[in-house]
Image 1 (cartoon, rainbow, N blue to C red):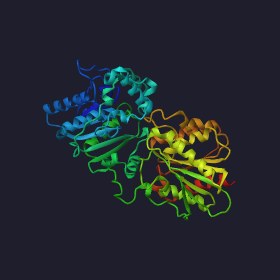
Image 2 (cartoon, rainbow, N blue to C red):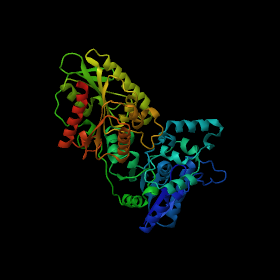
Image 3 (cartoon, one colour):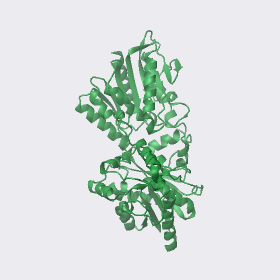
Image 4 (cartoon, one colour):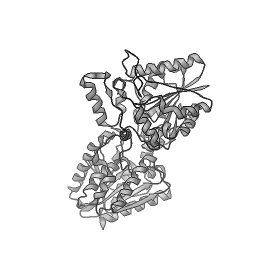
Amino acid sequence: MTVFILVSGMFTGPHVWHDTAARLNAAGSGVRTVTLGGLGGTPAAPGVVVDLESHIADVVAVIDSVQRDAHADIVLVGHDYGIHPVLGAADRRAASIARIVHLDSGLPRDGVPALAAVADRQLREEVMRRSAGGGGAAAELPPPAREEWQLWGSVAGVPDAALDRLTELAGPQPLGTLLQPLSLTGALAPVPLTGVLCTAGGAGIGLVQTRVDLGEPSLQAWAGPRVTFFELSTGHWPMLSTPDELARTLLRAAAGEGHRLTPANAAGPPAHLRPFLLDVPTAPVERVAHVDLHLPSAPGPRPAVLIVHGGPVPAGVRPAPREWPGMTGYARYAASQGVMGVTVDHRLHDVADYERAAADVAAAVDLVRSDPRVDADRIALWFFSGSGLMSAEWLVAPPPWLRCLAASYPVMAPLPGWGRVGSRFRPADAVAHAGDLPVVLVRAGLETDGIAVTVQEFLDSAKRHGANVEVVDVPDGHHSFEAVDPTDASREAVHRAVRAVLGRLTA
């Protein structure tokens, strides 16, 4: 018999699993939910200091109870913060665990506290302030107000009544659970894993594969044969939004089903290093600081288009993003049309790095405009993927020399769970002030749910404010379609987009 042990995330308790547990029971599986001391309004045992170790003990106690009652295949499910005590407990009882399910959670590492997984910088700083304020690890972080849950993850699909109940029953999070490092011995190495990604938050199997391809060390284990993946088209709380689908997914995970990632370089070059989908001529390249200038053969000061790669991209990736075939392909295309194509490196290594990365892009603009080979009054900026947020400051007050702004499969608003990235990085708000600035937006029809929502939000705002936006649609294209969908339709979309951008520069 399979027994699912369900462990909830921050501020919450077993009540969130009610509907999913009922469906798993109806399918013939056993279900146990874990009450983590001090969470979801549940008081800790007298004299117990609530920290990660005490929560690990709570999960171990349930594992031992299940093993005493009957032989069972135990599937541990950790949602959000819950994956930390799940992994700690599984490390101590590895021989008893059939599978671990990461439900819209991260990949905690040995020696790293749960606080490192909190994306919002202000929340991390608040935790440290409260800890330093005298209470230390015994202090608590208050639960979110109803409108604040979005800081912790997408609430897409959660009914209003369920969100009300989530808020009503939430309890403070003891800081010791966030500050105490997770201790793992390596005993989990043979235990099968499943990742369940909730795509309304922007995550998807394709994006995880991209990060594996980039060589991010912490993710390489996800590409092993013992790891499977599923996607759920919903927000961060699928047990509240889609309990039926979640139950079916957990049953399939327990059976070993799911998508498997491809190890980096196992099937030829990863997507970001595949050849550009168009055959464009090479151009002389000159490297200056953090930009590469792809020089046109035409004489005289020429217009320039700056190609801004997406992210976050781990620091130290080689080749650097400005050298990736997709970025250089666009720059070479521009150079072949008499426009200087410029690829830019920036330091968007984490969602907390947008201010630093934006400064890198601004410095690149200044460098290019000061080059005597460039017509400083005819510049275009072209943002890709996660760099889309950086388009906001150019939309809110377009300088007269900016003749076009383009964005391909962009992220146009901070994704749920990214926290408060900053008001200056909200293109949907900034486009209200774009005036007549031409904007070219390349939209992937098969975009990840969470990113697609941000694009539609941007387009709706642009329409309301009469912004000058041209949309180039790629109906059957995924995110990074140039690399993953090198079809005739994708090639034609690239031609249309380049013509639209360069047409504004040379008019």
